[in-house]
Image (cartoon, rainbow, N blue to C red):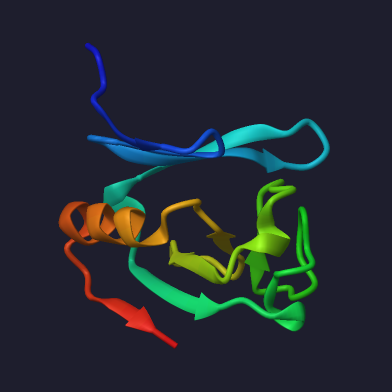
Length: 114
């Protein structure tokens, strides 16, 4: 069965079943695939020096994990997924408005803007 790609910026893929964060796991840079049904909440945070803008991979906060993205210093918004665990995947897509629109349709939860 072929999945329909709804968004792909090279690092983040949204298809009709899940979101895939490429280069998520350290040090092998393998991806993390998250079915939409596992997502309990979505929040958007402005990115600054203390909230991910200078972080290319990993975390400076034990609450979030960011996949490798060398372009992150030039981006201004961080999307955080609540999967029910202590550590939340966070990422910075090239087109955050489009990603948020797709996530809102697929997940059905309101998006928290903070």
